Length: 204
Image 1 (cartoon, rainbow, N blue to C red):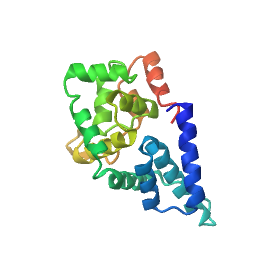
Image 2: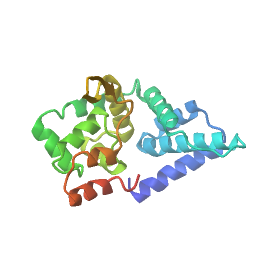
Image 3: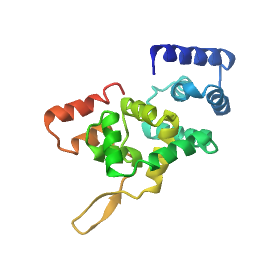
Image 4: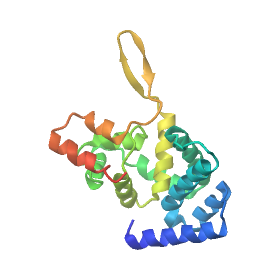
């Protein structure tokens, strides 16, 4: 997102909060529908505002429950996109990247290099992609980043992923996507390449 677009998004959000001091989920949804090009920034602002409102309402020190926040955001995104053509468009374009050569080309284009296993993890929802990779993927596919996130969430929920299997025990299922760092380090790449990939998540 360019500096100009960030400034535009910030102004839209500030004007909105001036008019809606205590916005509801429906208010945020309507704002996204009105300014779809700023959907990502608006969704982020909604989460931050919700966390702040929760903290202000309590005398106890506030600690963000990341798991709860992620579930809340996922539900909100699902509501926003469940009838949206943006979601169908994003899903179709992701599903179209199925040939090995296409996956390799896409991985290189978004900065991952030839590590298609990382891209496979992202597209299946099993790996949380850093913002820089998400932005690059959204630009390449010409879809909204918010729609990508919802497709990844749904893909993860529909996929049974054994976390491990051994010692005569039943395989455990991954309850949540793995972090970018965990996915990168799991490849056991040379130190220089590992550092480069980890730096993709440095802004998150």
